[in-house]
Image 1 (cartoon, rainbow, N blue to C red):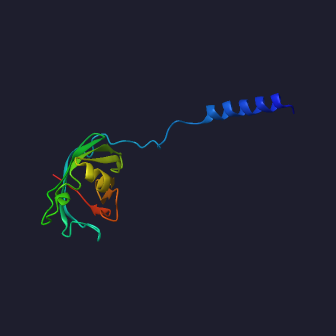
Image 2 (tube, one colour):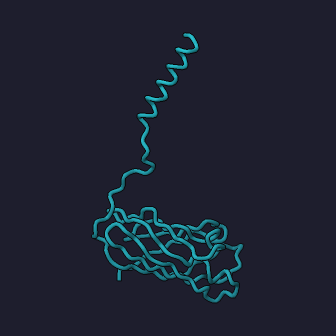
Image 3 (tube, rainbow, N blue to C red):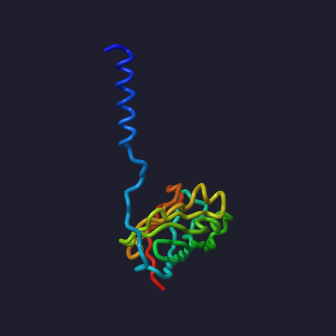
Length: 153
């Protein structure tokens, strides 16, 4: 094969392969259609990691609202008995995402209000709305994953 023929074969193969590739990055998940609609809430003690400026547990309140496939809400922490200024800002923010037909949370994100918290504290919630949920943080040595469940109100 000469160089031009090899180049043509590679070019044609690349075009064929590119046409076969999909742009979908996540599997299709059937989304909820109203069976979970309502307000949900949880209060729990968030135990910080051993290398923290917050020696006492943080009192966390999670409020969720579900409408169809949409999940929204807030997460609140007042710092509890801790005196360091960061202890009262960790995890405070808004919650947005989707809910699958199965009750699983889909891309549920926590948007932190404080810039320091955005670097260290929670950024997403995973799990099933009817079972166990997990608050997941960016710096797990300070903010370990914390399991909790919500109650429909």
